[in-house]
Amino acid sequence: MASSSNPPSPLLYACIAHNTTLLTEHTASRTGNPSSLPSLILPKISHSEPQKLTYAHGDHYIHYISSSPSEYSSTSNPSSPGGLVYLVIAPQSFGRRIPFGFLVEIKNRFLDQYPASSTDFGDLPAYGCAAFNSTLKQLMHSYGSTESGKQDAVKNVQAEIDNVRGIMTENIERVLERGERIDLLVDKTDRLGEGARDFRVRSKGLRRRMWWKNVKLMALVAVVIVFLVYLLVGLGGYLLHGIIGYYQGPNAAPACQKSTGAGQDGIEGRVLYKGVVGAWS
Image (cartoon, rainbow, N blue to C red; front, side):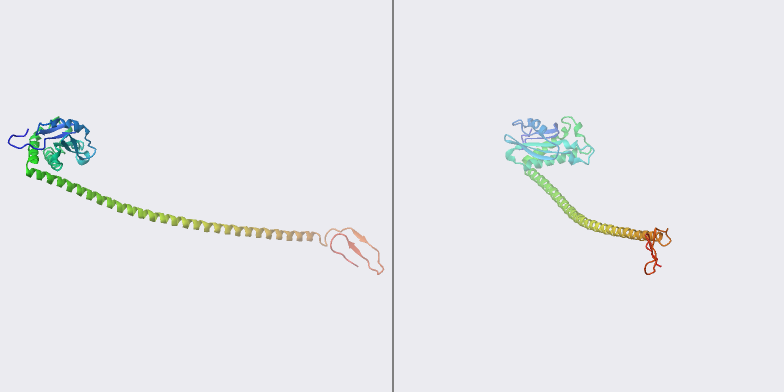
């Protein structure tokens, strides 16, 4: 509860939890019983990715920052700090910049006191970090009631904005670099496509030339075969005719003869009915 010597802080309630287990909290004002709200909000918070969100409840804003295991991939147990939630409740009239600046500060202070690399937050019982309550109280008063604290909160928010801007710039540079790589791959793909088309054209031309060459070779072989067959047939006929003529020559067996007497001119004739030789005496 706020001290009577200090003005009440617009930051009404703050806590740090692991999933739904409260580790530390402080209530600056009992008005409206703000400490009952975290039990409604914490089960709805997702840790699949880091979040910075605000819920509206009546005249109050419930601001929170939730961690994600992806933020602590270098630790041995990323799910332990990845389940942390930093929450604050303030009037809507107080805006968002100072509450989120306050949340950034308590996150940094909390992890300095309880390092993520050596603390298993999942094994801690409820209010297992109660030693941090006094720090919450001091920061709630400083950031809610003093000008210096408000300025620090604005600086924290600005630093977060600059950090996000740097991340976005880095991401954009990676996208641009990836775009250049994609353009390079597209260019290489186009060149490979052109090479493949040229290869298909050349291969078709080569196949056509080889086909004509085979056709010409087959035609030449056919002509040679026909010529050889013609030559063999002609030579065989000539030899056969010679053999037949040889066996039917003058030394052949005598054929039937027909004798005639002497003619009026005293000429005796003899006719061979077979053969082609005739003698006249």
